[in-house]
Length: 482
Image 1 (cartoon, rainbow, N blue to C red):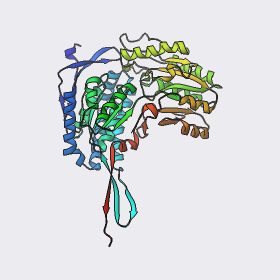
Image 2: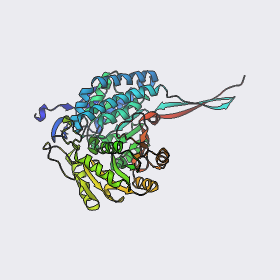
Image 3: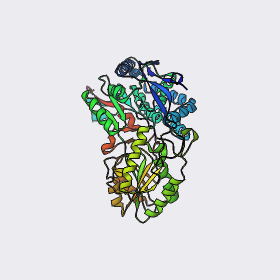
Image 4: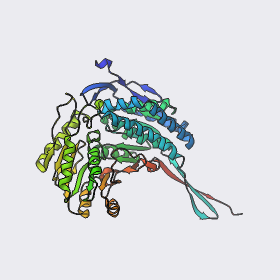
């Protein structure tokens, strides 16, 4: 297929596709070949989108009732489900993730809109004070125009995760998809408008980070900004937003640990640890990339993990393997550099190279390191690839100390049959989500999610996200006594 024959993905502003002066190639990670051309938008298109969102907010969306917005979100959910196959196949093509995972992402995206459709009708203010001469109450009001800058690893899920609560709460939105995986976010914007969202309520503008992303982060017309991505970019985004005193929600990655105690259930523990680090080839902020295991079962767990890693199927996403490709040649190079550094610090057990599959694709073998020093770079830095680090511990206090011995704080898994120990460890860990005898690396629509420490701040998911996309107004009225 020639470049002229490739599908063209354009900006979607005020209910219509908007051509740009230039385009860039979007690559299929399973083959390394272009699968689409994408509009390369910049400050002009961002400004047009923010203006459209402001007009829609002032003229229509801010005046709607919660029931009206709930009905709109339910309609979007229904439309996403009706296009489930299309969206899953597009996500698989654009990200390289196994097709079964892409179908899950489509289902979860629809679930976000359903969840916030139900939740927003329970979002109320409060009556305050008990005073005979004063009536005081609060209102939960939308910010206004919200900017959303999302990453390439879960474009469909994160699009829905950030847009659904914002729209349900009464905000209008400008979405900037990642340049490596913009196809499903742009399609969702179209489908949401087809489902009945008024023109301008949801706008999507593709482009590069330094052009479109930077323009959105610094735009003076924003009232709120949400960013998910790397810490380096997050600092730039927060700095740009600070110039306009714009509140920001930041989710900046993690180095999530599993804490495996001697009384764990091996049949449940090992498969879920493996899944948590190979889902979407480890390109997940909540991926369980560190296994902290009690020294009494260290050898047993390490051997089981090695056997599981050796048996994984690797291949293009459309073949539904256990492990698909990384998103780009650049990301593969970054992961391989981390692996090379890890060879000098720890014991390489499985993997460490590039598999002989699908020439041109961006694949890396599932890689297992054992006896990893806690201060090694592979134990400290977010690799964003299928790399798992095993470190032994002596007791629960040491396990918690090791778990918290990074600058991140997103998720953790605790594996024990001792419920008292589980509660104590969950309370002690400095992370936003703790899973006991289970692990969810990408789902959990109802569970509040966000960062502790340098993993960011603010909350996505759950009812907490509705509060994130509103601000509180207090009203006090003097009442004359009878």
